[in-house]
Length: 201
Image (cartoon, rainbow, N blue to C red; front, side):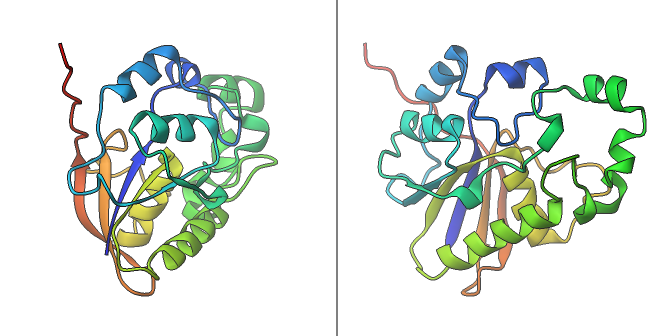
């Protein structure tokens, strides 16, 4: 089966460079308008739909017309604990220039923001979701978060998250993977654009 994954639309915090994590931030007015002008990826218009329980993801699914999407908390963004609501610059100013290194940023799965969730824990819950969704052979679409797309890419490629994000992965576009029966993802297509909704005059 094939699984299409896309990130929620823009929020005010996205525009301000602030980390959202589990903070339940809605889409901005501009973000909602942008998503309303788009359609699900070709071939997935009638697919099963799953969505993070975060409001920004649910709003995105609804704006795309995925009104019957199933909410699943395993698709939430990584919990960034004490750093939620802060920008990278604010974190470095408050906690020191080595704040990310001390949190394990150079050690891939071991990265854990203070009071938050480790990357390994994020990967484990995303892998559990993939295993469950693969039990059916019908294709599916997921509306989630940057961290979830990165997690699926990592599970598919073995990317060491201690290294910079691969240049071939654009998390503003759709990631399509093929799932084996046990839920193991394999890259099918990267950086798929969402079609623009035709406007009636």
